[in-house]
Length: 255
Image 1 (cartoon, rainbow, N blue to C red):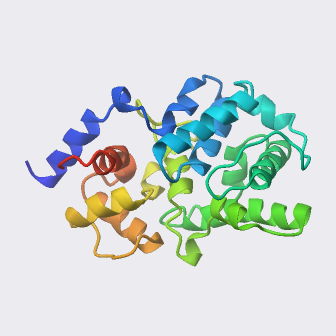
Image 2 (cartoon, rainbow, N blue to C red):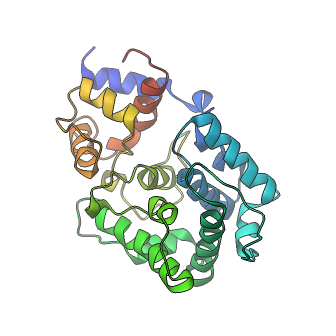
Image 3 (cartoon, helix red, strand yellow):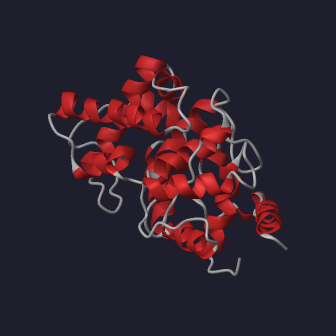
């Protein structure tokens, strides 16, 4: 099999039956668009580190939210004693602030999709600048409302121009924009060809082995290079291979 055939084979193999333990299982627990969207954002923000730890934190969130993520965010009341959770280097206060910023976004724009589209730069090859605009909305909220931007908040809302691969943001966008058994395709105004692959250590290692990148370090440049190379196999939907490539890396399988 050539590389295109292998990629297609793995794309088809990694279907809905392989969903667990991926954090994508959490937005799949809901049917309402508003719940899916906010749960997807929160799941992606927490998607770093050990998968057991990620899923444990997301289960804690659902317990706090009483399995109604959108309603919880809309009715959220911030206080330093708010019942919240800690995830790796997100402090309890970082997580409480995240809920405040999400509430503001829903109050101002009605949905995260509308907020993202408000910053969409349509003439650009990919979503780099739009991600910057989206992240800056939350970073400026932090500065205005709390007078500071903590390390945790900066990590939640990275900026591609500072070199970040923006793995979690690109993951959230994949879930929202693409449409198949795994991804929801709820945001249908954004073309899938503008998505960038969410690069973590697993994707980086597998893609280096497959000669899809010459970059040594995980950064935005690597994410763009891998995406451009995947366009040779599917120009309209290059990021469709992400789930399979990531899980092959995570499970230490042979490609």
